[in-house]
Image (cartoon, rainbow, N blue to C red):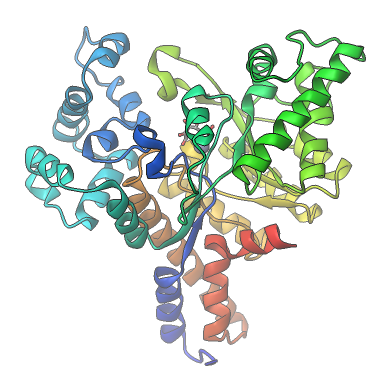
Length: 423
Ligand code: FIX
Ligand code: ZN
């Protein structure tokens, strides 16, 4: 252990600690190679990431509709994004810069703009070894997946019972239960669970349906061994509420989390399908109600909640909420918040209000390769913010040690999450 006695050494130690820290990526949409084409990777997948296709339609040639675009082969779609977002408009958005950073860190000559050559390089890669290479370049120990038992394409891979992947941990995603009970009930019934499509408060049918839904979750938890239960919730989510989704939460999800000893991850603030033609790129953001989080945490002190909110407007109130509840862990700069200016602001604010007791970011990567850029960009910002905070602490009279600095960096990048999950 070395005491860092001068500001310049402190600054360089902090930056090195962040650069060297192992990252745990606690929310992604990646799959193991055993899930076949569900695992997306390569330059065309990056170029057609929904962040970029949404951007394309703000500048697309007139006459190009999302429906026409969807019918095109992936490489043609990628060509259009390349042409309009990169070549004509200059790749200035965070999503476009992400592709540039990734290709550059892979050692490809993105400056030469040779898309055909880059495609050739990707065609020579093998999924398994490429996955390992990406995790190494991003500096990750593991990433948490999103595993949805209400997605038929995913279910068949779990049925095949292949062994899990060392770099990817499962999370049981259960949006359908709260967002579309009739559809979820239909699927559960088809799988042999007696669930009624229509929920009637306090009825015998509802009680039986809820019991069966809990059995469904217990069976899935046994099958995939998730690290947490996860759901996204819309910006108009409130709790408590008499709406069916409130009853599903109180009678299915919370008791199941309790029985199974699993935390609940909640991602709050979407306005889904603001422009449905754009698919995943058509979702928007709304300011949500932090009181719902407060009520859930207060009512269920024995349950751990991992929470991120989508609206920038909610972040301060959410930080204050997290100071009140030891069972609440904040994570990530979700989606539209995963841009440098907002990551910086949120990381500063969280440090100031919570100390190094939150998870600064998650990648939300749907395309494997983008782990590289998402974490490279986040690391740069976390390094700046931490260096600044340690500098101020030094001025105030504290003399940090190198161990302390390394722990601080790791805490923000997965250490605090691991501790929260273990407690
Ligand atoms: O609900 C979610 O997990 C969101 O992160 C996604 O649905 C979203 O499409 C996304 O990829 C955001 O980064
Ligand atoms: Zn996500």
